[in-house]
Length: 297
Image (cartoon, rainbow, N blue to C red; front, top):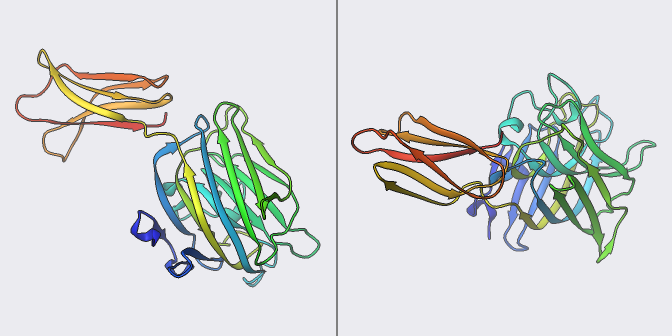
């Protein structure tokens, strides 16, 4: 069915993403002359270096041309992966600027393909960009093309224990190219909350691209949400919220009487997946409403 009827949304140029109801796949245009554009779906959680998550999809490139933007003759990427929508919709977020204090992108975990240009070979790439753009983690040793019309299956798997991102491609059931592995070093972190098929703007870049392709069979696996099985009850005049938490999340019990302003009652950080009990020992007279807010430290 049309993904736009199932929680998917578009930011930017809506013409770049078209659902093909006959073939039941997504027709994608990567046009770097347009603003940053995302065909995205919220994950219902926030992923960081401590989590396990996966992304797989089928990709067929139909055509690609570098240097479509005057004065920017070099290659540019097509992208599918994870991002932080708040970061990615900033007016100064430009993927092609690289490590750049003014324009550099942040919070990305994605698959990229750069077509060949001049004497440079085509490159299949994976990249992780942290929360402050001070350093990028990437593999660019897979110097292979994606032949037009061929169907490729891409698997990306991140493991929070060893803190590694592994990407493999298959073509006709046979692995294509090398297995790419990124080791996330100590002190490096990211925050992503959306999966996205992404067409980046080529502003602040020396390359550009116009490409068309087909995306299908996209599957995302993420951890459970940070608040599960939430219940509220009274015990000896004290309200308490109980829920299953997840490690490395910051929780706040909040209260309101009018849904206009909320008061923080109690905050804590969960160190592991366990049931937390958060109490309001001084509830206000009359009716009140409670919620539990979860955020990454």
